[in-house]
Length: 466
Image 1 (cartoon, rainbow, N blue to C red):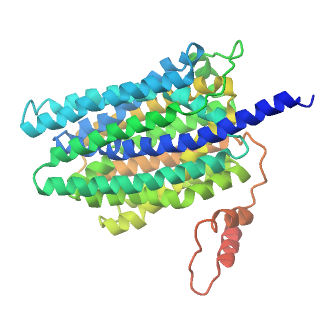
Image 2 (image 1 turned 90 degrees about the vertical axis):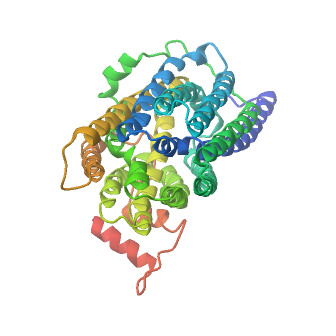
Image 3 (image 1 turned 30 degrees about the horizontal axis):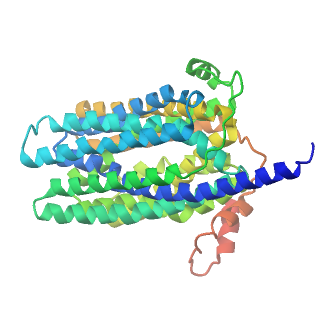
């Protein structure tokens, strides 16, 4: 291969500098986008509960947007053929910002007692439009960010990025919950939601400002890069990425059976305050935060598939642990601990697996089809959950807890059947349990066990695995 000329070397150096600067802007953009999510998206279901939406309708807040969002990605995936990726994302953000205005208006109307019986349905309609608009940008953004991050350090960079965003989520979601409880105690709950949604809109405006500062590498689409969704489906069961996509969508189906009802269970059945509710919810984010950088380094060294294998077995434990106790302390140290460790690694590895499996030219298409499959899984799972909570004649146990059990069983079956069907795509170091565990555990914390060192614990675990 010919050595680059001096002019080419300068150009490469300039592009690398632009990419490095853009990654910094991407983090700033992501921080404010995370603030938007923490103050806005995270409180849509509590808002729905506050305006007296039924349990089955709350499930629709996952199922309908969960399907229509990825469908919009499907239609928008080819926009990168005609328009710059930055332009697509910027315009989508503009309309996403505008969609906060009707959501704010609904909170005001409910406070005034105007058309209150229709507001849950209107919320579902406007939130669905919001999700559709936000998803239009995703294929272009995913393709764009993939070109800004070097393949070698992808797991480490995304792990660090996720760590920062998780910390921001913790801070702002807790502040939002404390604010909501303050407004509720003073009988101004709706003004609490108006405040949060307004701040979410402002945060998204700032996020869009930093996004526009990012450099967009030129995307060269080779002739014949396009493949249809039907072609993707036909070949899915025969290729590695397709099998992984099927696994992820089936896991979304299984998780979505119970997903919409954790908030309902805490706020309606257990009568948690907003602050208690959000502390329990965010404890999972905290545990994910403590492990995410370790998962990133682990994935770079041993591969994303090994992360998926470990976390895919842990994920089914999460809903089962909710049956043991109603104590917030137990919920934090039991299911939320396991869920944070498992879902943090699972989602990081799943995202990186797409980058590793798909060429840059096909990345936008592949992620749109991948997310469409996931959307179908979410829609079917949440719809099944809505039907079960409404029609299943269960009396020996709380119906929501029974749905948690069904979801756990479904997750377990999906992992046992699908995980052996695909493999790691990158060249990685051989997975040896003792070395791998030693690499994963000490990064974030030491295990304080009386009478046994951490080294001994790792040796014991390795012995059991053998």
